[in-house]
View (cartoon, rainbow, N blue to C red):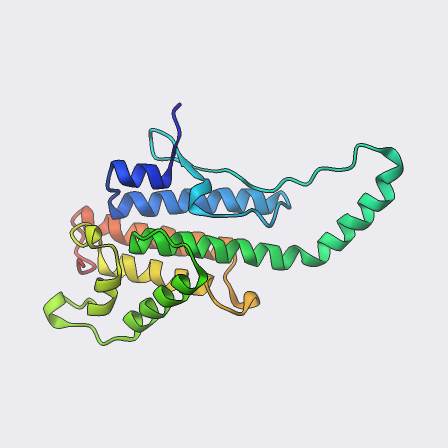
Amino acid sequence: MKLFHVTDRRQREMLKWPQRMEISIGIARGIEFLHTGGIFGNNIKIENILLDDCLNAKVSGYSIPWPSKKGHDSKRYEQRALNQIGSTYNAEKEDIYQYGVILLEVITGKLITSSSEVEELKDELERGLSETPSPSLRGASPMLKGVSDSSLRETCVYESLRTAVQITISCLGKVSNKRPSIQDILWNLQYSLQVQEARTSGVNLVTKL
């Protein structure tokens, strides 16, 4: 099995919207697996996401705590573990924020290199959601259409994109305890993909971007 970074794959082959959603769901499932095992603070970023030949996502670079090898350090290790319990919630929500940055890159097609870029793009997405839909764009928001990756416009259903944008904005919230759980994220992304697939299969429930 050969692995690629998401960024490499995107340069070699433009990923369609359904593929991007499937990859995003795969990443979220990987994070859920880590969190279920008590592994938080995982340095979640797009450079640490690998894809196999079937575009299955693999999360790399995550944090695994290692106990001390010396027996007399056991008490110190136990105290460190107790201290970490207090910061687990913050580490979990930091993972959610970092995953939101990945979703932002998936939606916009841009590699983000600074927190100011995150805030700027997030603000644009928020304005796009609140903007009055345009009849000429079949109910889509002109700003939301403008900030999303231009290569998606012929493959993306507007309601699917809107759902993904909403959960992305929630992930990037400044107040950590208001960020969604990884389970909430999975539910929303799976719904987004279902809406997309319903349109692709000919069920006329939504409008195309």
